Amino acid sequence: MDNHNSSHQLYKKAMALVLAGGRGSRLYNLTDTRAKPAVYFGGKFRIIDFALSNCLNSGIRRIGVVTQYKSHSLLRHLQRGWGFLRGELNEFIDLLPAQQRVDEEHWYRGTADAVYQNIDILRSYGPEYVIVLAGDHIYKMDYSIMLRDHAQSGYKCTVGCVEIAKGEAYAFGIMGIDENRKITSFIEKPKKNAPTIPGTTDRCYASMGIYIFNSDYLYDLLEEDITNKESSHDFGKDIIPRVVSENQALAHPFSMSCVPRGEGIEPYWRDVGTIDAFWEANLDLAANMPELNIYDKDWPVWTAQEQLPPAKFVPDRNGNHGVITNTLASGGCIVLGSEISKSLMFSKVRVLAGCKIDQCVIMPEVVVGENCRLKKVVIDKGCDIPAGMVIGEDPIEDAKNFYRTDKGVVLVTKKMIDELKEK
Image (cartoon, rainbow, N blue to C red; front, side, top):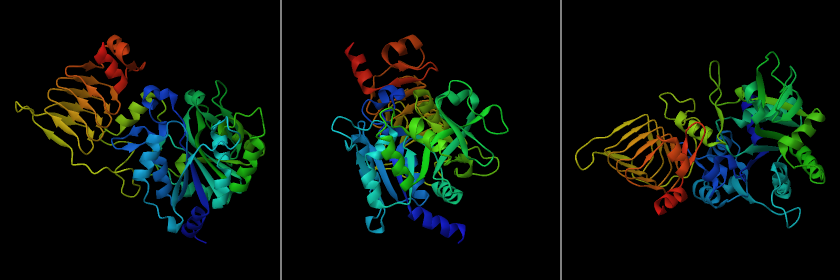
């Protein structure tokens, strides 16, 4: 059987489970009203759109989305933008809120428990392989290549991994591997002595939160784990170390299945779990040649599409023309005679006359009043920025009224603006 037919048969036997219930507390007020996977990204998308688009583009059309924390925004997005799969062709996105399967006091207690509480639903669909995905990373990956790698290996579990500098190992689950990619050790967020990639002294393989299991093996692991009172019921802390101890874990480097891939192409994968990382990943897209290509017709990023008029850039009432450079603007935006550089504007943003905006991420339905100066600001949905406001120039004032990171990125939310207006 050739590779094409083999891959086709394999993805028909697989089901993906996207873990989308996390709060993402390091994003602070951005997740006050929504789960991290529902946070806006890239001018028009939500973070979860990348994992879901990877599924569709890889041929994986049976998908479950596990939800918990403040899920309304996420559920509404999935219902509006992801309802096009054909049930009669056995294609679906199944929304899976917490079941309280264990008892009536506990919701999802960890990533492994989130899968366990949906084990009956998984079994009812009868997949031979279960693909477990984190719903909160930005990347493009062909899961069918990883699935084929898993099926041909003979291992019962395959873990997606990305190469990082050893100095960053403290923030990830780090794996040690042998020359055949068998995982020999797995340490969650090591503070020192992180295992390095064979042949290097300063590079490590970090888990991407992507796992492929033989389904029966996964069910056995979960049913055993749920009875262990010492377990935190987490894949990284409990399940994967157990699999490694049984010599059943294979490492799958992201470079093997990233999109695009090839010589000289640096795989793009971002954990946007902090305000700084979120801001940087968004601003990446405003570069002349961004590392992440969201214009790729062969690997589109799907999302909910609201019917909006085109963005419009016009002079102000005095005839002053604005200057817009290296900026992404979505439908429904109107900008009057302002200067905007290296920024992203989501749908229905209004920028009034005389503003100077630099390196900002402006989410939907924001109004920026006249003569504002904004630099390195992330503005949450629905904010009404008062005329003449200056944000991003005075660290003391910024920290007094908003949330400011150590790197100088300022987060502004509607609640912060409302409180400021009351002072």
